[in-house]
Image (cartoon, rainbow, N blue to C red; front, side, top):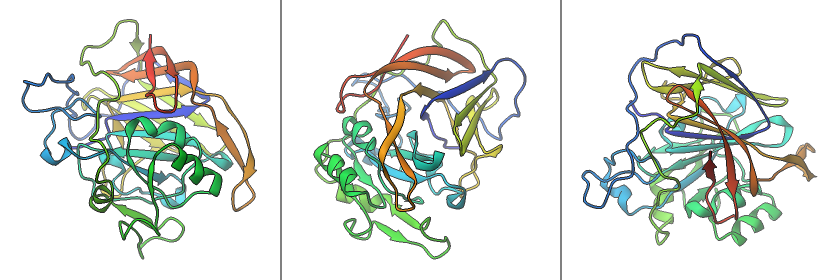
Length: 309
């Protein structure tokens, strides 16, 4: 069973529960492998370090899709097939995801929503083709200035379209093959971080972690020893994709970042937020049933996050 391998949350509050038992998952989840040497076979996926089963992924770029997380947008389409997922705060206290795809073709992904200025700071090191529902003029200018190839409903050549079985504005979906075709000429994916199957020293057993994005979005991760993964809850219930698969991750990284008023408003008059992801701060890494305190560092928009002990 395929599940999300990385989840990154940008937030301000975290509580971790240690010890206890968790509910087992339906199927085991193999651990990722370290980055292979050029002589190794099979090759490894750039964003996960796991064995690569789709030869087409060797030459294709990263695909980044802005996915809605509002109650009316659930269940998500294709969210469970992402290699890396970044969760970010938006106006009104809600969150949205940046779902990054490379090793697997997810087919249809969505619902797709609009971009935010912080995306221009998060996405450049992945050199992706980006799918959004649109963006405010300053946001679009920031993303274009960052060198991102951004596609929406009007520029995606049919790769983004509306579906009839969902209510707008939560009915825009993206077709991954069309987006990859539009990303021709972009560089193939490269590893953002090193991978190591060995459990780092310095952690402690953890059964669950509660994440809070006040005031509207709350999620929790529960360690499943049988499946070897962290299972995601949303608003007190299992977070399940449209396929029926529970969202899960090998690694959950919670980065504490400064958040302030953005100085603008969305179309409903709700104040925007400004998320500062350049600099450094505290982080928590959840993996292998362990919680490890860490630091994050990101020195430039073109640089990946670093996870430091």
